[in-house]
Amino acid sequence: MGRALAGRAPLTPAVVPTFHRVLPSAECVVGPPGETEFLAVQVGAADVLVTRMAAGHVVAFAADCPHQQTPLEGASFFEGKLRCGRHLYLYDLETGENVLPARDSSPEALRRLKPGYLPIHRVEERDGWIWVAEAPEPAPPCYDPAAERPLPAGSPPPPVVAPRPAAAAPGQAGGEPIVHQPESLDVRVGEEFQLVLATTPKPAHMWRSAVLAAGVAVVSEAFAPDQPPRHIARLVAHAPGEVEVRFTYGTPWGATPVETRSFLVRVAP
Ligand code: FES
Image 1 (spheres, protein in one colour):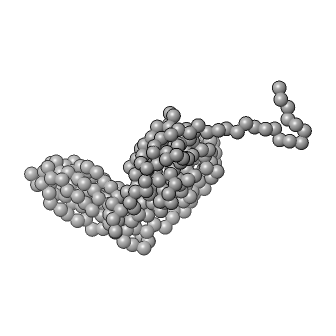
Image 2 (tube, helix red, strand yellow):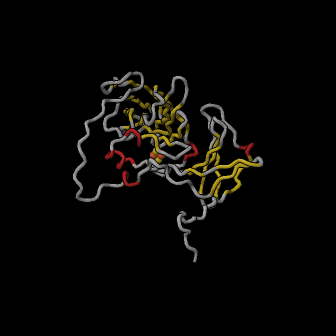
Image 3 (tube, rainbow, N blue to C red):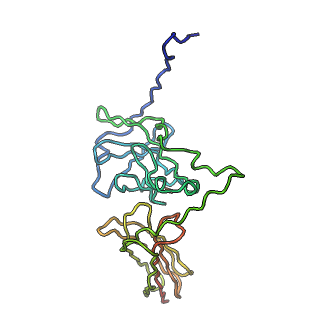
């Protein structure tokens, strides 16, 4: 059995990561602005996405969002950070750090929101190929799992935090929540139609719809990164009557919507 030499730290064997050759470099290129492509690859047992950053290097990361396991193939970029399409959390693709909501949350909100961190895999490019390490990198230093766990039973209640002032809403610099006068539109049974709302690319802010009666259903909703950006909801009418479709703008965790818009949809037979 070996023993440490006097005056020297014991030598620990270096862990050499196992790299897998996953793609020819030429297949992973910087996409046009707003159209980043995430390429799915299998690295050992891990499902991984790779993409080439605007700076030219390739990054590799877990294929599912650490928040609620949403596949990230349909994610987008916001100011250089990966934005999951489900709740718009932002992750840094160099470190895996959750940027939003983690940097913006009170301790009690963080326990509720549980953003975690995005596992990042090391990448090497050589001989015209992209190689990805099978094991993810360690968690980023700022990640503290204890900060996302519920408080132990019997802990004193967290201090009451005063609500933040309302965040800026689409078309407004900030201030009180806005509730618009309802608008109305006429459609026919079987008709597919769109409702388009002005929005902002503000991190983690989104419009969410609620259909307040049967007769109309939402087919899809998406953020369109046009100039100016828009939120586009596609709906279909399937029964005659009057239906209110309400949109609220804010963060998924915000108690009070920052802005509300309503549409009264009159569906003719
Ligand atoms: S599942 Fe990705 S942000 Fe919630």
